[in-house]
Image 1 (cartoon, each protein chain N blue to C red):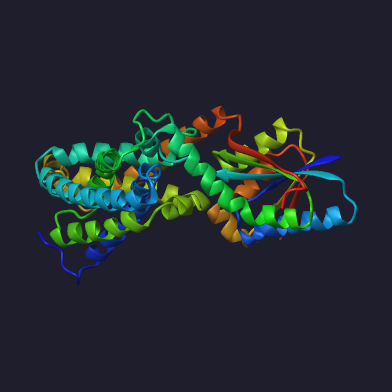
Image 2: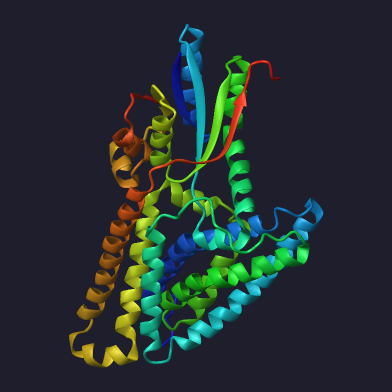
Length: 140
Length: 245
């Protein structure tokens, strides 16, 4: 049984990655699916004023919202899965989670920027490729 | 001296103000949504309305005070130093899930108070930025305020998400604030007198130098801070079995 991690931000690209994994599982791949959503940390000024619990509840709500469609797709395909919502830098958190839970593969969608746009915008995908210690499958 | 619509300077300053609002108003918008979230739905609406109105009034008051203060010799230098700090802080990533020292409001009154106090503290950066970029143009100050208010009222997490998705905006915002900081330092009456013979080149050098310092110092500090964060900070973890509907 392989542990496969799919970062999900609710975007069409991330859902394509989920669909791709569902198809692979349909073809006989035996995998334990982990979905992870990363929420950007709120500015310190905000967290100082509203209290830790509100901040974490807020992140949880936003994360659940982003994961909703991906969970529905997996539920429909009757594939059990684990969801995680984390706060922090996207690439770093994904790489750290993959490390901690000994994931065998990361499957993620890319928005398919051109190289120039990528260079200019600096993508979290590029950063993750640099940080990840396991194979990363990119779904376009 | 009042700038007019027909001068290129006016439009450059206006673009700067819009940029500053985009990078600095996002946090204010979020605090409004967060402070009221523990309240029942009906009260939440009133807390948001009350808090927003209070925040807007405070912001207008602050702007008037800061714009006046900036005309006093040496205080432009203080404003410039504060802007440098704000700019560098913008580039350094934030910590984890918050160590809130102030309790979230569980009554409508405390939610409104939280929104107003938080906005007062957090709008200072915005107000200093606007006042600095507007130079001494009252038209620009008013336009800057007018642009920042809808971002605070309707922006919610949109701006933060935008900044998170495109980190280049944060670097650009930092550079912009550094540019404005260098620019107003050179425009302080105390400094202006002795750089007068070398104008306008010194002015541009100060601005470009300000932008450069912020980007270099900010990215260096950001790298250093990021290197220290190793673990993943999970807020929620759930297992979805097959039997569930």
